[in-house]
Length: 247
Image 1: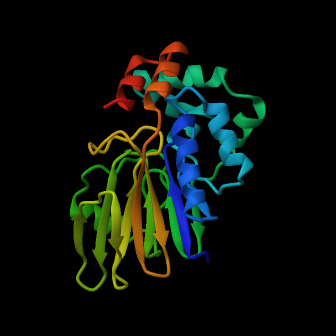
Image 2 (image 1 turned 45 degrees about the vertical axis):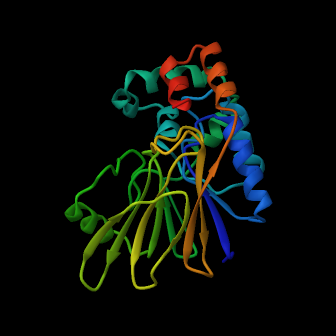
């Protein structure tokens, strides 16, 4: 198992943010990356962003936007902005990239760590937003891994479970370093590279897991959000997609 792993989620076809994040990962000397889905959707460069993941052979789970690309009943549950974005995204993708996106698994387990887009044990579309302690206890009981990383909400979050007492702690996760206790289990939301909604700033966010020192680090990376927003508008995506990047 590598000493450090970079976990990225919700790139949402934002090539400017993705390239800056990959550059930061390279500067840090991290060679192992895991993707938590929603590589496409909302943003103007789904083909280029998917190729970043494909060229590096980054293990990646399926996000709800990839699920929508696969068709089926899930599209009916999307809001208007997301559905319009899916329709436009489809026109911007080559057949090989479409096939890649549809082939992604719902969950990955690597070296005793679980990775999922929405909610463990393997949900692609379920949101974990301000979950009650009773719900979190039930979720923790459904899988065995000590650590689970997820995304989907675009908001940083960390939930700590004490197996000895079943106590749940909902702690604030901010940019910087966070120590993990060896006798606790954790659910960690890594935020979003391409469309953060954490209320901190509009920088791209991702998380580095330091196995040796049992810690995580939330990285925040500045990128040219105005350039991405301009391309979103030019391609006819909902204006809301661009506005969110500039907040």
